[in-house]
Length: 319
Image 1: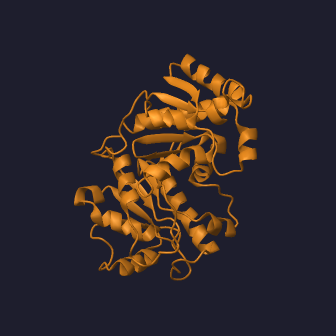
Image 2: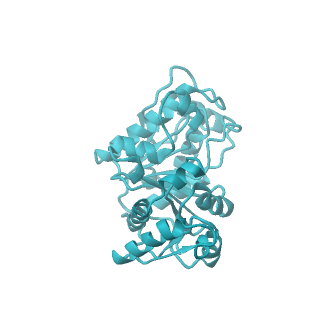
Image 3: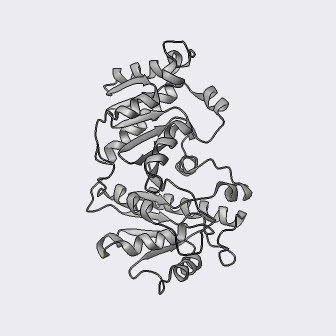
């Protein structure tokens, strides 16, 4: 992305969580030029409440705001509630629609709370599923890529039981996830990344000793990617290949394979990108922190890293 011209739509996430607070803190920390390239989507009254909690005298000067996900009452910080879940989805959807209209180049969404969203009766399994719904593409074509501590990890499966994930894993699905990761890396200024695919089983099945899944799924995916000119290798045992750190992009088969190393190395500074659709959305690699919401103590570091990443200024994840 061209760092000089990137426009970002920032959705405030669950209004009862820390999303509104870190949105305000992040915008306040930017210089005037960077601030002018961000539009905040969320309930205005909640932003005002968050400003009070942070000790700010109103909203940051020059902050652009679009009313979205309006609540019927003031925010109840720290409370898991259906109205808050519906608000988070509405704000993110409005930001995505703005991006699809060409009003922004990418969307950043502050943390949501999945229980709140489900209480609102909304089918939701993370921001990738919402991106798929708004963009009108199948959910299995939008994937999560975590970026942090020099790692970029695409997840083939995400919020589902291991049994369900194993039943869905196919060579075609793995290839789609890897190709989505390649395209996302290109948008972030890293064309033609070297890729390592994790095995499904320990030691990538150890030549069939620990199961036949890698011979049936991941190995054919690597071969197919190589035929397309992609610099792909594997499958490897995730522990071994991550320790070597020789590749620029990794493809994890299961949620914990990819989340654990990122959360261990960048617990409060990771970005979570929903990739594969015609709109790029990134959230932060942490939750809505209901236990500290409304106290003015939330750390905006991960959000600032995400803004830098999508603006083309981030160097922390280069390798």
